[in-house]
Amino acid sequence: NLDGNPMMNLASFVTTYMEPEAEALMATAMRKNFIDIDEYSQTAELQNRCVNMLAHLFHAPASEGVGTSTIGSSEAIMLAGLAMKWRWGDWEKGRGGGGGPPHNVGGGNVQGWADT
Image (cartoon, rainbow, N blue to C red):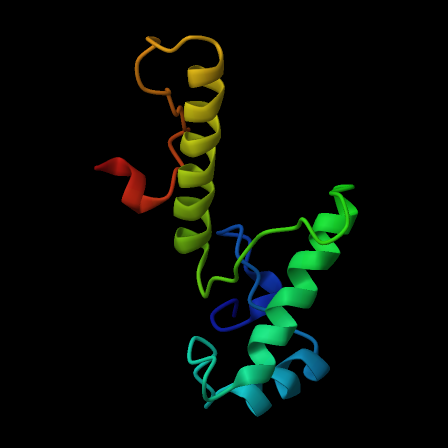
């Protein structure tokens, strides 16, 4: 019987198996609202450390890494799309403008918010 066996889930690209240590870590944080940085100030520090690690990974100059955390992939992709749009706008202004809006092309597996 394949029903309910996460190790046999070949129907999607989403994994349902997780190591017991990861499950225990998630259980300790389940009741925290990580968006409320006033209540959980250490989450802001954790976010800043992650942003700095990623900035270092991509060879950004020291202390010039900028970023934020998101709860879901849709938020992350929307923020990335906005960053792309702003960067494109700066590039377009630098070359004299007039090229119209940027074109964003995605496959059939694009996030649901991009369908509209």
